[in-house]
Image (tube, rainbow, N blue to C red; front, side):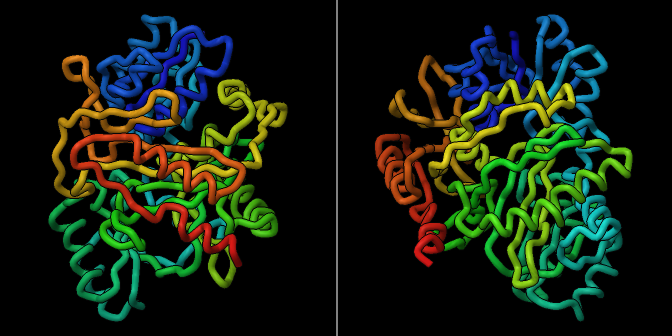
Length: 420
C-alpha cells in the first residue's frame, strides 16, 4: 500500500513510524514532512494547507490511503477534497472538524446537549467583552474562536490581564481572524487529562490517557506552548472516571455531532478537567494531539493502519484496539526562547536507536539542523512511569544541538499523584 501523511511535525513522525509497522505498506509520502521524517518517509515539499496540490499529488501517485493529521487542513476540508477524488482518507470532513475549528460552535454544542463544560459567554464586540469583564469572576479564561497553533487560550489572573487578552485578540489581531469572536470562560480547577479516541461516528474507543505540560517553564510557569512533554497513562484518570466520561461526555459528543448532521470519523481529542463537580470538557481537537501522540502511539499494540482502515469503512466495532499496560514519557526539546523569539540552524546529533520524533528540523548540506521552536520529542516506554521518566531524560542527555532547551520536570506531577 502507498500511504500519504499530511503534516510535518512530531505528531506526524509518530504516526508514520507506527504505520510503517504494517507489512502491507510499501511506501509512505509525507507532505511536507521534515528533515527528521525523511528517514522514515519520502518528503514532498507541498504545504499542509495546499489542499489542491495535496489532492493532485495523491491522485497522480495512486495513493491507496491518506492520513490528514493537522488541524488546519482538516478544518479547510482536505478530507472532503481527497475523498471526492477517490482517495480513502483518515480524518473528519470539514463539517465535523468545526468541533475544533470554532470554539463558539463547540461550546454551543455542549450547552445544547448537556455535555459538562465551563460556563461561558461569547463576544463579537470588543467593547461588550470589556464591559462584561468589569464584573466577571476572576481568574477567567479568554479563548480565540478559531485555530491559533494551540496558543489561543489565555488564563487571566486579573481583570487587567483579561482585558489585555481581549484587546490583543480582537483589536491587535494577534491570532488573525481567529480572534474575531472570543469565548470568555469560567476558570476551572483540578487535574487536566487528555484522552484521544478512535471513532467512526458509531463506535468510540478511547485511547490510553495522557498528561500534557503546556507551559514553557518548570513548575508550570511561563507562556503557553504547543506542549513541552507528556506522560501516559495519566494517574488521575481512574477506571471510575473513565466510565463516567464515556457515559457523560464521549458517547454524548458523538451522538450530538450525529444529530447535527456532522458525523465525526477519525481521532477526536478530549481535553478534560477533573473538577470537584466531576469531569468537564475544556476543549475538543479534531485530530491526534501533539505531543500526546508521541506517548500514546508507542503504547498501542494493535496495528494503527488497520484501525484507520476500519474507521474509514465504519467498522471500528470489529477492530482490535489494544494498548500496553506500560508507561511512556516524552520530553520535548525546543529552541531556547520558544514560544517567543528563538534562533535556528544548529546541527543536531542524536542516537539512531531511540524513539525520537522530529518536529522542527531540516536537512541542510546533508546535515540535520534545527528549523523550529519545538525541535524533537524524546520518548521512552518502561514498566513503570518512574522508569519511563528516568530513561527519557537519560536519552535527552545524548541529544545535542546548540540552544537546546527542555523542561526538567516532565512527569513530576504524575509521579507525585501515583504516590497518593
